[in-house]
Amino acid sequence: MIGLKRGTVKLKLNHKEWEKLFEFEKKYLISKFKDYPIIVEHVGATSIYGVSAKPIIDMMIGMSPNLSIKYVYNKLIELGYEDRGRGGVSGQRLFVKGPEEKRTHYLHITRNNSDYWREHIIFRDYLRKHKIDREAYSNLKKKLAKKFSDNRAEYTKSKGKFINNIIMRATK
Image 1 (cartoon, rainbow, N blue to C red):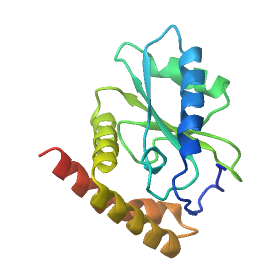
Image 2 (cartoon, rainbow, N blue to C red):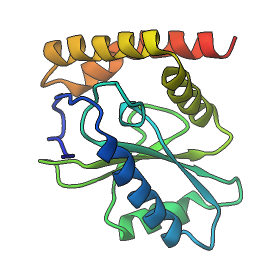
Image 3 (cartoon, helix red, strand yellow):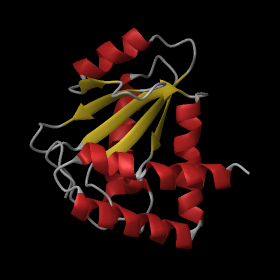
């Protein structure tokens, strides 16, 4: 149901089971950080019903300013997540779960008041409410998945203009 080889792009129609898998992982993470305030959100295409997506549950942890990144880093490593670094994206750090042959989860760590946090929530919420833009995004993703099936970096980069346009419209 979920999982995809690292670096490849294969899309599936969003599945209601993905929300259940997110909720399970969210409860698990919150239980492991019970002494520290974190917010866990489902982001990316797997969080938007009706959008084709890579079958990888995309999540984001928002940390309060008083929570140490080093503590979160060490805890996630202990829980089986792999640190993939910043990937050239400021304001966040990416952790992944699952072997390279079948990644199952992406977990972005950021401050819960950062631009990175706000933009992901704005984009997700906008597409959940706007069917025409949601369908346009899904169609763009399908087109790019065919073109960049073995080049996830180009696939991701090529969605940037559309995503930025939605964020600009949503914040006007």
